[in-house]
Length: 254
Image (cartoon, rainbow, N blue to C red; front, side):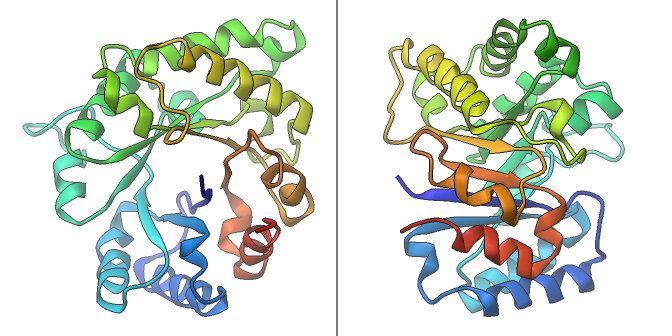
């Protein structure tokens, strides 16, 4: 299974700056890198069309993801962007349930589940984020908390579709703080989630990917990305710096 590196640009860059960063990154990558590593960028919604047009026209080695998707398919929901609209732009992935959506915007597990269903129904690959707050980590109550999050996110999903989900462990206490979960902690969590998923009859270990996100940088990327059970990383701030992002990608031992 190929490793995957996802750059989440969050609320940064206008569409012209996003184009420049995409082009700079593309020029900085090794030839045919996409044959060995999946590279995704998740810009703001306003840049999706611009970036996907360039990717399609120039057959770039980079794929595009949205940072979010609506729980609704259509209707009177001002400000929302539906999975169908994203799919029509040839967007193939969507980040769902990021800790910032949960904490800042109060998204519930039930809402995240609706988003996952809409993404899957429109052939988007959900990048389902889950993570525990610091108090759960400190009280050693994090594994039941995390497994519950994962189960609620995929509740009611057609069984064969769960294989295509990317499960992203991003401990809340590590997002933008500079703190990073140890490799041992990450392996423990992803192993528990993988075991939970593998108990279901639809599980295919050749398809389902389990990744880590939370203050990923060139300093810690090699240890994370060259661990067998960690299939990739979700990168925040470092993905806005081409040199750092390329260092993270190149830290994968092929």
